[in-house]
Length: 530
Image (cartoon, rainbow, N blue to C red; front, side, top):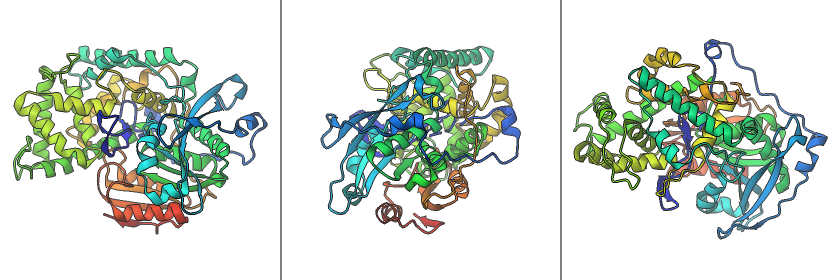
């Protein structure tokens, strides 16, 4: 899946949920992450990521010597620039990748602390859009006063040579594909959809598709750091952004400054386990939603006293009805609400408890009034589809990065079928669909170059790993796992709902992170907030 970064605000006047996530279309990177059958069955501890040499190779000197040519980019207070990185770090002479960078300079007062790079997750989320629409204006004033707020879209994402796979109408068809196949014909249709998606990506960027890994994106960040004139990288990453930031720390521990990894991923886990544990995370989030829903007078899943299990059965029954007969939505393009779109609409609302009321209203309209518009809106928000039927490249980049970072979770439909009992146990509501969604990387046109590995970052300055106890997309155990690997990590826990913790209403969390960013003092390891 992807790990999505959410805030209670609208984006570009259209989306309820702000950028970025990681659904399970290939893995849970986000987030964000796959492994073969054999790799999934091997119990031995994975190897640790090896740091790169401290000196800059001669072949990379020209990239590290770049100076950004800042220009106005149409967003008040922000400047933009383009930097170059080698497409292939092993053979830098074979061409470059252009990276889009944006910044908002420190506003003062107080001594400038350098640049603070931010990444909202994904993989596939636009960091430049995120900093311009949220972080650069919404982060605490004290942080923005002391840091230049900076973002770079990772290679293959948004403004940095984006991977494109399907046009709007073909993407509409793809998102409607049944991801709970009942027979061989429906299974073949799902496999055909995954093949079509993969072939579209391969046709668009056959060379770039081999070089959009998280390791390469982390190496790009070091070039950006040098171009900004910073001795060390200061960084806040959410969701999949924690994997990107941790990878940077593993590769460049002595260039790692103040790192906040919020909604953490565990890089040591193979894909199938990542996807299974993320499925469990969505199951936990649904239980919390259901417990809240049945206390409300307008809950369509049951009245007071209804158990979460029963509420889930009611929702599954509704999904089953949609599988046979999609609902009208009034959509200008004639789209109806299918089981797959409704499932994604519900999942989208799991990222932020602030969306639970809208979800109740959308479910009520669909289940009692045969109106699927509300759930379709939530699904469109998740997929980043606008009212004109155009999609951002979020889902394309999400698959491209995930399918390169780890071997696929499953290699065939038969493997998925054998795993269905485990996924249904992890989430009776979402398990079947998320298991089948994990099959997409099996048909990817490029073989994975990464593997599951521990990240230790020995020698790095103290850094902060943040986990939320009922996080749907990045389960809390992942934060525990990452903090246990990183040699200098401090684990900061938010006892609550939703995806990520910083800037979501906990004064305790925000104070701990702000103190770390401004003064370099990390919270005590194991600190808990609510």
